Image (tube, rainbow, N blue to C red):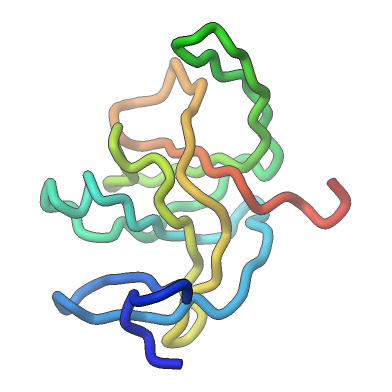
Length: 133
């Protein structure tokens, strides 16, 4: 299968412009792992695909309140970088690890309860739970 972003296959677009990389597997992110995220807002705001995000908490749980009053509990991981990690509008983006020339899915960008974080330095991901979860 060709990596081109078409159909139902999972591919990740990156630099150089128009280059597609296959997402070939998935795994859980543990503390100390390095990941990237491909949020559209960060990309189109000139930050490219942020990488070098270090997982700092491999089991974070927080609640998220929706506008309709629904409250849900989110479980995932949290990461930090001294560089850019993301911004509002990146939610739902693929969080992945670089494995050779392929991408390994690690989750998706989600909301965070990080009220004490410095601007654009922390990110939370959910979607790939630990094997014993």
